[in-house]
Length: 72
Image 1 (cartoon, rainbow, N blue to C red):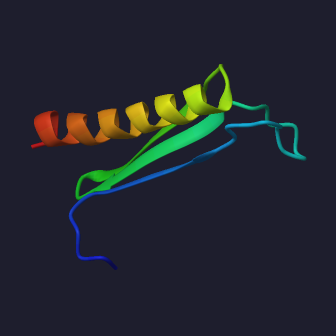
Image 2: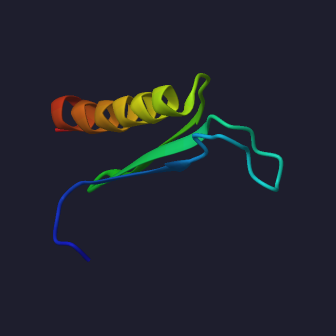
């Protein structure tokens, strides 16, 4: 679709509230799509909204860095 080799995506609940299905704040997913497959992390993070967002970005970059350094 984009022509790129790698794609990173995140979604989840950083707050202030959970969702209507009972998922609490801090329920987050980070994913990486690579030629070798799709890798997903389901995370249960804690902290305020800003902290959860920062941790989510950290995990997304960690997936990408691991792929670039170990996935070759």
